[in-house]
Image 1 (cartoon, rainbow, N blue to C red):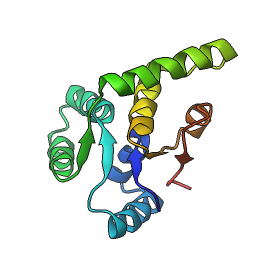
Image 2: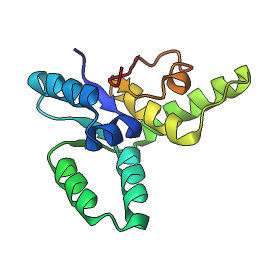
Image 3: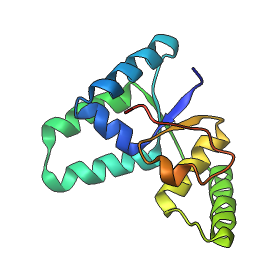
Image 4: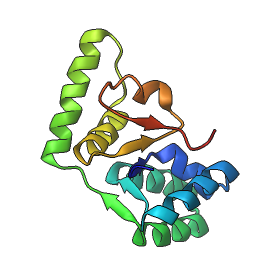
Length: 134
């Protein structure tokens, strides 16, 4: 198993108790010390919880985040994302900006993206994609 970057949808499934996702997290953590996710995913989770005043879920997520690896955006990852954007736009198969930024982080750090949104991420040729929910 190669090191991975967990996308927001898979992380949400983990917190909702999805059995298959939890099994894959356990298998991954048997091999690696921590889960990797991007600062973008951190933002997406927080922005989903804050408007609902979901304090219990927020506390659980913050504890999880403190024990794992949040990978920041860098100038290099954003350059990679911009190139992907240009390439996909020329082909007429764009992907939303959030996914492009997450893909840039994954590519810069040589990580497999773990997502349930495989249809978007598979458009990015250099990106390795897995779905831990199936």
